[in-house]
Image (cartoon, rainbow, N blue to C red; front, side, top):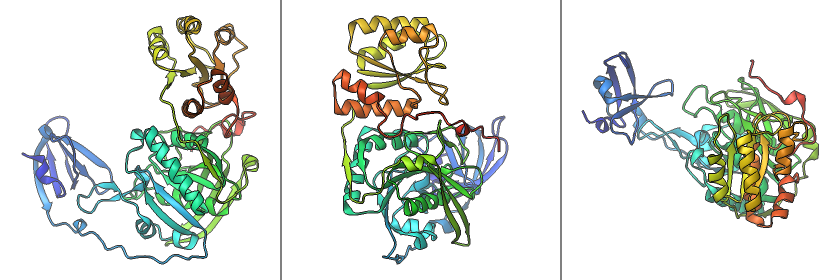
Length: 442
């Protein structure tokens, strides 16, 4: 049985053995592992079945309707509306059904977007750009550099705003680092993702995009933001500051939360039958602190350092782990416990290393909510004396990418310390907002 013979065909699969004894029906997708059959079900979910657990496969349709790729006609846009670029970096939000295989692929051009989300036509003009087509876990420094340069080009071209579609797993890494790399930015740049692809009935891609577009049109403030569902329902999209947001759930549509601050804004939408019946932007206090829009303004820094690592402290952690990274890095961002602590073994390694190298160690907290205070307990004070530098309530991931950016600008230790502890893009909040703590109870 050669499983590759079934790729692109609609099949009925019967299982055998203890692992898979049932029956499934769907379209067979391409897959690198030739011993596994991957089937897209009617629900939109993919199921992988090992060859040894398959009793028989029956082809239902070799010339299925899905193989006929629909013709996408050009849709006229209103030239009087604001012009917004949508840059695709890949990920779930930029995916739709591939009509050759039944699989999901990233191929969102301008016409794809207008065809898939007709509500856009009444909101704004868009220009679609496919810059990358990759899952977010594969994003690298070079991708961030290319994206930054593309943003610079489009800002100077006179665009009113830019949306960046991106996979959700590392979305907050990208929104944070682009916040720093775009040192001066006169328009809103909004990262947007989707937890569920556009071929599923529960997809959140359209609402997230429309929420991001609505904010981009209505806002009078510039900066880097991230737009995702605020709850499991479709009526409200949260607009988060790019440096203060984190993915906090593996699968929920409201997976992203602002940490220690409220979102910059909420976008309330009511959509039915391809029309938007209500769109309202509700601004929070953080909004007033942002820079005003200044079209055409953009200054970027497109050099990043790889001499940085993010190291999470954990119980029973060996000092060998710290020593390994200390040999190769110029900066280590530590995720410590509570108010900023590590074990005696790790403290001893940090203290010993401080005598013999120029390595800089910055402290964040793995609790995420709340902030560091390394003066309360003895261990915290010892770490301070050993040269560890606290970063207040900066998120670990934000601190990590900020260090990559800072080392791309300077190798001077004192300048690195100064830039890392200076609030450049809202990454350090003046106080923790108690209303920002979320528990996913709904």
